[in-house]
Image 1 (cartoon, rainbow, N blue to C red):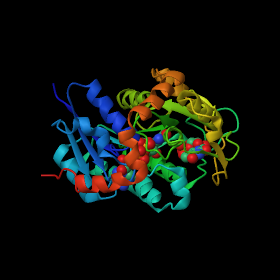
Image 2: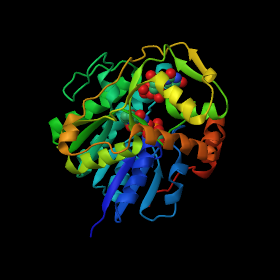
Image 3: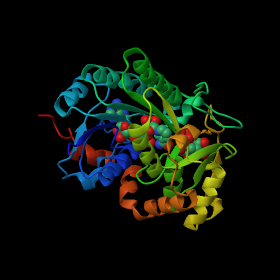
Image 4: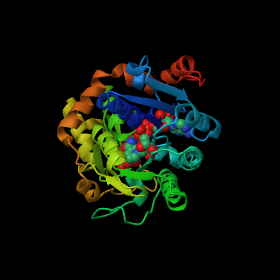
Length: 341
Ligand code: NAD
Ligand code: TYD
C-alpha cells in the first residue's frame, strides 16, 4: 500500500501539532513533513514523541522562503499540503501587523506558487471565522461577505481569498476551512483559555477585557483536526467550509467555569480596558459541513474539564513558555531543524 505524504506547515504550533498527532493515530502508513519557522508560538517539544519516527520529518524554515519550500516539494513530493502556519494572536497584530501580513498573506502566495509549479492532490488553507468579522445575532454562512475587523483577521482574509483565486485562475485543487475558536492541549498560554488556566494556577489575576460579554464559539481542537481530515478527503475543490464548535459562550462564562473547575476564587477576575476594535461576537453556520457528514463529537463540558486538567498536569510544558526560558532552550536544541539532503 502506498503511503500518503503530508506537508504540514506551522505544525509545531497548537492546532498543527494536534493535527500531526491525529494523522499518526489515524493512519498506519503516513509520512509527515513539518515545515515550521519556530516563532515564539512554535514548539517542537509538542511533537517530542515522534522525534525518532522515520516517517516524521521536522524542517525549520519559513513558508515565505521559496527556496526551502521548492526544495521540500522536490525532495518529498507531497500529496497534501495543510497550511496552519500563521501569526495568530489578535493582540499582537494590533501592536505590530508586519509579520502577519508577511506570513498570513505572502507566505500563502509562496506555498500556492510552489503548488502551481510542482502540483499536488489537495491544498488546504486553514482560515478562520474571524474573516467574517463580528455579528450581533444569527450566524455567518460561507456565502456571507468578509468584513475582517483587525489586522490579524484581515491578513487571514487575504490568504483565504488568494487561495481561492488560485483555484479560479489556475484550477489548483484547493479547499478553505474557517473554524471557530479552538481550545485543547498545547495552546500557547497567551490565548484566553490557557492564559486564564495557567494564571489561576499561579494565583495571578485573570485580565478580562471590557465588560466580559464578548461571545466566541468554542471548538475542541481534536474535533477540528478530524474536520480538516474529513474536508481533505470529502470536500469539493474551490469550496469554503465553516467548522463550528456549536458552543457559544461569553468570556465571563468561560472565566467563571475555569475558576470553578480549578476551585479558585472569583476575586482573581480583573476587569481591564477593552481590546481596541474588539469583535463582539463570532458565530458560524456549519450546516454545509454537517450535510457533508461531519459533526463535533466532544461535549464542551467534558472537553473543557479535560483541557483544564491537561494544563494542570503539564506545568513543565507551559512554565518555561511563560517565563521566556523556552526561547533560549529551543534556540540551542533546534538551531536549524533537520536539514534537507
Ligand atoms: P499558533 O500560533 O499556535 O501556531 C502557528 C505556527 O506557525 C507556529 O508553530 C509558528 O512557529 C508557525 N509559523 C509562524 N510563521 C511561520 C512562517 N512564516 N513559516 C513557517 N511557520 C510559521 O496557531 P494555531 O492556533 O495553531 O493556529 C493555526 C492556524 O489555524 C492559523 O492559520 C490560524 O489562523 C488558524 N485558526 C486558529 C484558530 C484558533 O482558535 N487557534 C481558530 C481558527 C483558525
Ligand atoms: P483570544 O484567545 O485572544 O482569541 P480571539 O481574539 O482570536 O477570539 O481571545 C478570546 C476572547 O477573550 C476575546 O474576546 C478576547 C478575550 N480575552 C480577554 O478578555 N482577556 C485576555 O487576556 C485575552 C487574551 C483574551
